[in-house]
Length: 411
Ligand code: GLV
Ligand code: MN
Ligand code: MN
Ligand code: MN
Image (cartoon, rainbow, N blue to C red; front, side):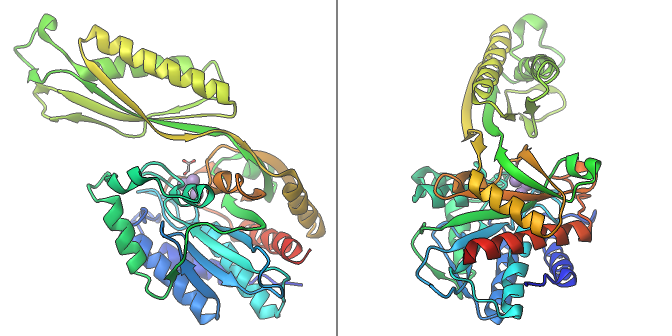
């Protein structure tokens, strides 16, 4: 029997939350920043102290490997991510990564020899807020290649992806760089639910059946900058007027009639950004989510058409590009059954649920059976510094991971 050490898990969560800590109790540890590197260095140090093997790949995915009796078998993989939102919570990503580390340590403490090796992974840039798209690490791992255009990307803060990636890899000289992608037997990820249902229903764990689809658009509407006071209606080419009128129509038309749809504009800016000048260009992001692929297509078309129509009325030009496309996925049924059986052995109440957030498990699911374990988060709040997970719930998720992982790595 593998005993999970709940107070060690809590202490580790505190230790990592101190890296990039924000005044309101959250974290800002965006992908490939110094904070992200510091978290990787800490995890590496802890892993080496336990005698685990540590390595990384060319997209800076970080791996910690514990040997198995038949060490050539494809490993079981578990993990999550250590990067965060700019005003992120301390559990999104860290909980899954540190739960996986706690499982490795507990196996080690108990002297359990699994048949296959177990590899913890901390994926690069799950969030996608500094460099789009999200899930870069798991996408590259499952495609076996890093798209060339990623190297030309610029962060929202102006930094270059190529140089940030290089510096991140070089900041971990203890972790040798191996070729991208290797076979694995299965992948399990613990994560906070990031929504309210488990807490509201008083259920300690969710067994995740799949993930709804996500599509991101980058939109620019271009007009002409001109004097705010002297430019009459007939002379204005106002891109902000165009964009805001299209957006208010889209807010009305997308979510209220379709309870499964999500439509979010999280970033918007106007240039030159002067109080008394009509902007010449406005840009915004659009995040669309839906469990059905055909609805994602329809909503995307509706967004493009509304922006184009409103821009025409203002004699403005439009430039729209898709920056992320993640079709919905269904997780492996057998793996879900292993997790359910493990929950039964632990006497843990569980429920099956679809993930509203995207996760690296979606990409891994393309190359190996993947699934996830959700734990309740307080008031469903996530991508928020106030994000909170009760220690008892974190412990239950980790115990379930340990049980399922032991079954999979031994069976
Ligand atoms: C992941 O962070 C998401 O936005 O779903
Ligand atoms: Mn996450
Ligand atoms: Mn997140
Ligand atoms: Mn996420």
